[in-house]
Image: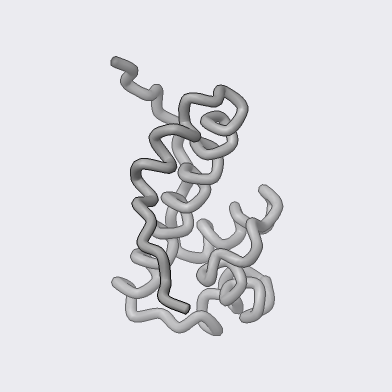
Length: 97
């Protein structure tokens, strides 16, 4: 059986018309952006997951699950991870069109 090609962008465009779906999508998108920045920073510091885990006082598995986007940690754990990287979370106002 051959695979059917689907255009995810087209499907997403339709789904984003649903207000509830869009709110959930935007929340998840923001979570993934934070994760991407954490991974990028850890790698740029040439720090292993284990080293970050030790600095953040969390398990290496917690770092791995976060980086593989399998688990979003609670706020306290996220802050410990960010602190372990020598970073801080800042809130900025979104520019809306």
